Amino acid sequence: MLDNERGSTPLNNRALGDNFAAQSSPSYGGELGRSFEDHNSSREEWEKDKHRGRRALIWGALLAVLVIASLAIYFTTRPKAGEGSDQASTPAKRGRGQSGPAAITVGESTTGDSNVYVNALGTVTPLHTVTLYSQVTGRVLSVHYTEGQLVHKGQVLVEIDPRPYEAALAQAKGTLTHDENVLAEARMDLKRYQDALARNAVSRQQVEDQEKLVLQDEGTVATDQGSLLSAQTNLSYCHISSPINGRVGLRLVDPGNTVFSGTGSTLVVITELQPITVVFTVSEDNLPQIQQQMHGGKSLAVDAFDRTNDNILASGKLTSLDNQIDTTTGTLKFRAAFDNKNLAMFPNQFVNARLLVSTLHGATIVPTSAVQYNGLQAFVYIVKVGASHKKNSGGTPAAPTAGTTPGTKGATGTPATVSVQNITILTSNETSSAVSGIGAGTKLATSGFDRLENNADALIQPSQPANGQGGHGKSSGKTSTGAPGSQTTSPAGGN
Picture 1: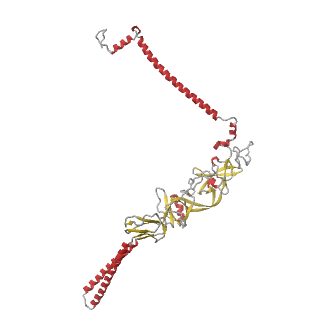
Picture 2: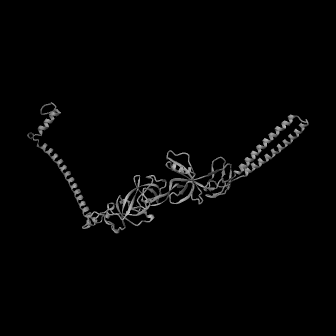
Picture 3: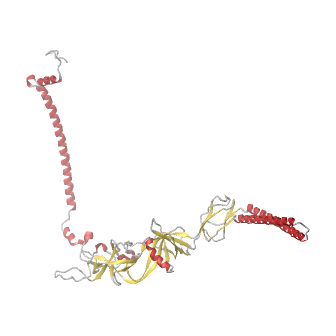
């Protein structure tokens, strides 16, 4: 670029900048350039002010909505006039924080005998399970059983075509008869040669040869007898019979099919049902007390219950135990035998086994619903009827009165107080527990535990029906040995 006014010398960048600044000065008439710059900067400020105003409008609207919503919630939820005094006078409506004595039901400890059981999970196992295969090749002529039928030992179940084996048997008999006569002839010749030898009519060599010939014929006869027995055995295999008393399963072969020897195709499966056994596992911790009873020659009783542990299926005796403890589970297998006269137990059925180990005589018996747990420590609430820890203005205990409970509308009963007593569980089931630590005739709380504590006031209610005292299910799979923490206890009475 050449500067025409100042010569032909080209201007550099700095010179161009100085030239632009000079042209923008007021003396050079540069007001128009500054006016253009000022116009552009004012438009940017106007855009920024516009966005700030819009944001302020949005935030103002949100704040107004929040204020209106807060006022609406306040006016719709505030208590009406006089309602606060009612709530203050009825603290029974405050749930767990309510005042007044707790409503409870009461049971009483007694003295009696209590059985010590070991509960375990078991499986019904037949003593004998027989799987029958075909030992000969042939066509099935008939099947003499129906599915699920009870069969007896020796009963024919399947018939295979016997004709080939009958023919083989007849052939074996014929061969045997022939060889037996050959042997008889050899023996007669031997007798003649021996008589002739006595008269020096024949040589001794001829007599000895005849003796060996008789021995050969005897061997042939023995072979024929074995062939005859084999043919008879094969023929018996055509009539497949049950070797035990039991029940057959589903039919696995139909008439007209050809079965083959040695293929492993099952024809029928029979399981023995009477007697039957139950195999169950017991913790190794219970093994010493069980062995102590078994070494004394005592026969231990075992009861089998159904899956729900509600109905007893059969009662039997402990017969044997395994010779090794399973290291992965720490349990030992036991086997108990049952007559199963009513066929209530079925092979591979899941059952709950209850083994009677011993009996506690003269033990203190309490309702299981009365037993509570604080960690591993079992305890009960002892109820003292007619006592109260509330005091009047003079500082003396208030006289107990039966009737409406203060702070509880309509609740009536006998006033009492409860105190905590630690106990030791000896054995337990779903209804009663044998314990030590208290005596017979002691009244115990059996419900209302959510509001009870030591030295708390209570109000005794009439006892609920047995089906209403929930919270105590079966203890299948657990041992009733009284070990702390082995019981599952929850408050009864539906509180």
